[in-house]
Image (cartoon, rainbow, N blue to C red):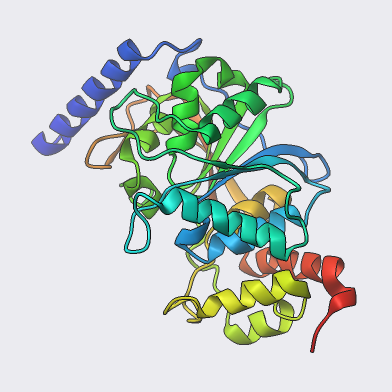
Amino acid sequence: MPKANRYAVQNAACANEEARTTMKYPIEPQDRQVPVIPLKDQPLRVIIDSDAKNEIDDQWAIALAILSPERFAIEGFVAAHFDNAWGGPDSVEKSAREIERVLDKAGMAGNWPVLRGSHPMRYQFEPSESKGVDFIIDRAMAGTPENPLWVVGLGAATDMASALLKEPRILDRVVAFWHFRTRWPEKCYNFNVFGDVRAARILFHSPLSFVLFDTGTYLRCPMSESEQYVKPYGELGAYLHAYRHERPGFASPLKGFFDLGDIAALLDPDLAGWEVVDGPEVDWDLDYQFTGAQGQILRCYHVDRDRTFRLLYERLERAYGALRNG
C-alpha cells in the first residue's frame, strides 16, 4: 500500500475508533440494518428536512411530496441551514419561510408543522439543539422498528445527526435518506456535506440505517417544458415556474433539479437504480475509506430523468387541472 494511502487509512481508523468509544449506541456500526425501500403502494411516514431557500430544486421536490398523499404520510417539515452568499446565520429562517410559501401556494398552508432546524454542529459529538431536532426525535419515538420514520434530507445533515446524538434510542425507529451526490467511491464531496462535515460523518459512522442518494446531476428541465407542464397548474405551478427567474442560472437548461430525484425515487422505487454497498468511513478531508467497519448502506446511483419529471407533471395536473390557466 502506498505510504500516503496507508496513513489515510490509519487516520480514518483512529477517528472511527474515537467515535466508537465516545458514542454509545445499542449496536455497533457494522451491525446496522440495510434499509429496504417499501413497495410503492405502501405508505411511508416522512419528515422532509429542507434548505428550501438555498436552491430551486427543493420547491419542486416538496411539491411532488405534498401532491402524493397516497405514498407519503408527511409528519412535518424541518427547515435546514445553508451556507453561501444568500445563506448564513439566518438561513434556517429563510428556509422555513420558503417551505411555508410553497405550502401556501399549494393551498395547504397549516396542513403540517414547519419547525426551525439547527445551526451547524460545533463539536464532533455535541448535538446542535433546535425545535426541529426535538420534532424528529418525537416523531421517531412515536413509531416502531416495523414502521420507522423516514427522514428525507435535502440539505446538510445537522438535524438528523443531532437527533441521533441527543436521543440514540431512535436508532431502530428511523431511516435517514440523504442527498449527498458525492464523488463515489473516492470522496464525500458535495454542498450538503460542506455545510456540516461533522454531521455528515455521523451519518456514515453511526449504526443508523442509511440511504445515500448519490445521483441526479442530470435532472434538468428546459424552460419550454416548465412553461407547458408546470406553469399552468394553479398558484403552485405558477410559483414553481416563476421561481426560475429568482436568480441567474435557475432558468438555464443546464440547471439541475437535484432534490426532485429523492422524492421521485421514494415515490416510485422502480424508476431508480439501487445497490447495497459497504459503508465507507469519511475522513476529515472527505476521502472515503473502506475498512469494513461500517456495515452496509443502500445507495441510489441512478434515477430516470423523464419518469421523475413526469411524476410531478401528472400530480400537478391531477391537483390543479380544473384551474388550468392559459
